[in-house]
Image (cartoon, rainbow, N blue to C red; front, top):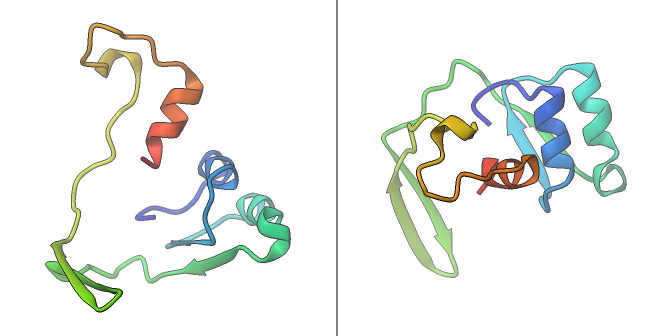
Amino acid sequence: MSDPVDVATALVIKDVASDGVIAPDYDSDTLSILRGKRNGRFLVLAIDPSYEPKGVETRDEFGLTLVQDCDTSEVPDLSRDHVVTSNSSLDKSAAKGLLLA
């Protein structure tokens, strides 16, 4: 995460299959929510909020090195005003699922 994890984000993370989260900050309510994930075995790491990533990210997967530019895009607004298809029904569950898609 690029921003501190708030309660709303923690509730989304709680329902998503993952082993951990990395973010610049967490408040006490957020940590209480995340402590309950995976029976207390959910990894919560804090990063330096002033860190600026280099222009390229690399990762090794099964002997293959993947290289890509850092993602500097903004998180889109998922409100109904920004649905760009003729089917403009976007319920809360669908919007929640798209946040981490």
